Structure formats: structure tokens, C-alpha cells
Length: 432
Image (cartoon, rainbow, N blue to C red; front, side, top):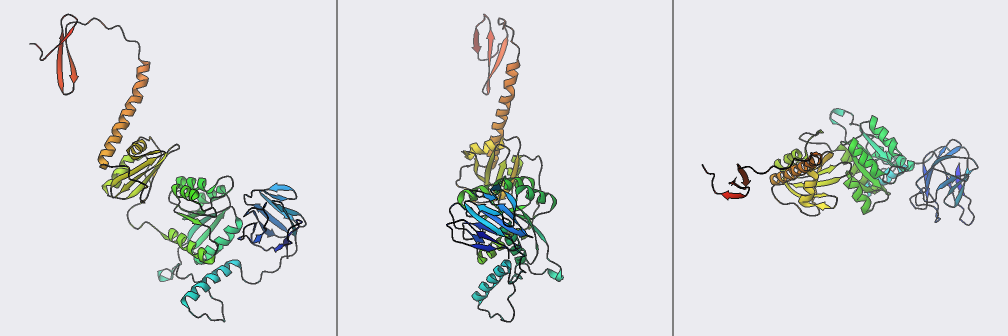
């Protein structure tokens, strides 16, 4: 059996037998081959046996992955060559792979899940045959015996080992109603989205070149109907806020136990199966924000109107037809509302309502829209008048006043003045 052997002096001798599946190497205890040494990243690299060679992929490690002294992102290790992860040297001993025996990792995970469910129900299981994965309740057969609808699901992760393992598990749990597609990079994912009607994208944040948050933004702009969930090993509040604010439907920590995997699958499957039950869905082009807000308020809807262009991103919160909060950059309240409605172009998206951090806008929506329109008109007029004033020719000298009547508007009254000797003397009424 082919294997990797630790040959660095001072470290306890250890080895890992290789098969036809991707194997992760790292300091963390969730790796298939754990190498406990400070220079090794928690998730350092992954390898897969291909014939008598070993394919190697670095997983954004801190101290790099090296083949025969050369740093690599992806590479091939030949028999007898050394692989260095951090400061740890490993030798690749190749031999003819043994025939696969026993139960695969995916099957073991499914059997563990079934066993856990059986123990809770205290239902006897016949010892003569192994239990079958209990997936019939997830996607029952269609009426009339018709085959279940296939849903295209795209997994995006820099780890081929995770893509392989999680993809197989989800395919099995869905009774093969999920058509799984995998992409280790953002450009690969975008190529798949261009050619396949994907229903759900499940992506990681930590990826090379273009990270998951950037990819999430691109998907939302180009494919607004595609649902996106983020599954990451770096589940902190900063990443959570960034993912949800960029349009992710779910933010989930990567599962490690059979029970966690089943829970995550159920959440993702619910997202895949959810469809618009009533009303219309679609895209409007060249529509004014005032029109969208008016429709939401007249219908007494509750939603979050997210507005963005290349320089600005903001939100307007509408609750049962009332505008209750607006935010853009550091601005909040009516000032933020006016700023958003003054934008000349961009994109908008209506999202399900959730309570804002504060209520900063009061007043009837009609009044708010009229005030925003007034301010926008004044600003536009000011901008257009300034260039005209600069380009105007010098005016001729003002001639001496000649006796005539002039009318000057003052509020609602008209005051009439007449000239006799070059001095203005107001009178109450014009003389007849």
C-alpha cells in the first residue's frame, strides 16, 4: 500500500496509508493525517493517489508546501520524493494500491447517523443485514411514481477532500435528487454557473485569489435568483456579518459529526426546495426607487430594500407599509433615506424583513418621498445653474433708471414702486 511517512528527526515516526480519496494533512485533529508540529497549519495541504504518483494541493498554509524543495500551490510527487509541510519532511513510498475493502467513509457516516436515530427510537435492527440510510423521509417519491426532480447544487471550496466527502454525503442523503457540482476556485464556479441552472451555491470563505465574500457579491449581481449559503471553518461574527450583508441566505460552521452533517443537509435541502408560493417574481429594469417604495408601502409589506452601486450600499427598512429606518455608510435616518433616493443609478434587492438595530425614520411615507424629491430637485437645479453663471458674458453697464413702474413680488402681496427723481419711493397703490 502506498503511504506517506514522516522522516523529520525529533518527531515521532508516523505514516498514513493512501487510497483513491483526497486526504487532508494538518495540525488539526479533523485531518485524515494529523501532523502535530507548530510550523504545520491547522489545515495545511491535501493529497490524492493517482497511479504511482501523488497529487498535492496547498490549502493556503502559513508556511507553505514544498516538493523536493520547491514551493507549490499544486504539484505532483513521485515515488521516493519528499514533501515538506512547514518544517516537517514526509517521504512518498509508492506501491500498488490495495483493493478497496470494508466500508467507505461516506457509508460509515450514514450508518452512524442511522444508528443514532435507531437508538433514540429504540427500534430493533435485524443483525442479518446492515441498516440502510434513512433518507426516504427527506425526499419522498413523487405522486404516480414519477422520478423526483433533480436540483443542481454547486459546492465551492478550496479543499478537494471536503468537496468529495460532503458532496457524496449530500448526494446520498438527498436520494440522488441533488446533482452535485464542485469547484475549487471562484473562476471554476463562475464557469459552472454560466452553463448550468444551479439552484443553490454552497461556498467557503477562505479561498485563493478571490475569497468567498467577493464571489458571493458577484453571484448576487449576476445571478440574483440563485440561493447562496456559506459554510466555513472560520465562523466568527465578522465573517457572519459580511456574508449575510452580501446576500447569503445561511451562514453555517463546517460540520464535523454525523449529527451535524444531517442538520446542515436538512437546512440546505429546505433552501433548495423553497419556492415562491404566490405572487410574481422577476426583474425590473430602469425602475425608480420611489416606485418600488411606493408599491411596498401601499401594499403594507414588510421588507428590507437593499440599494447599491459601485460606490454606495445602503438599506431602507419598511414595516407593514411604514418606513422605519434607513442607513448608508455612517448616515442613518432621514438623511440616509434622502441620500439613497438621490442616487442616479445602481441595483436594488428586496429582502425578507428583520428588525433594524434602531428606528430612525418617522412620518408618512408620502411625505418622506416628497421631501426627498424636493431636495433632489434643488440639488439638481443648483448643479445646473453654476456652469451657466460661469459661462455668462459680462453684462453691460446698468443704465440710469427712467421713470416707470416696477413690480416686485414679496410673499403673497405685490408692492408697486414708481420713480420720479432716481429715488425709489413705495406707494400703496398704483396711481391712475
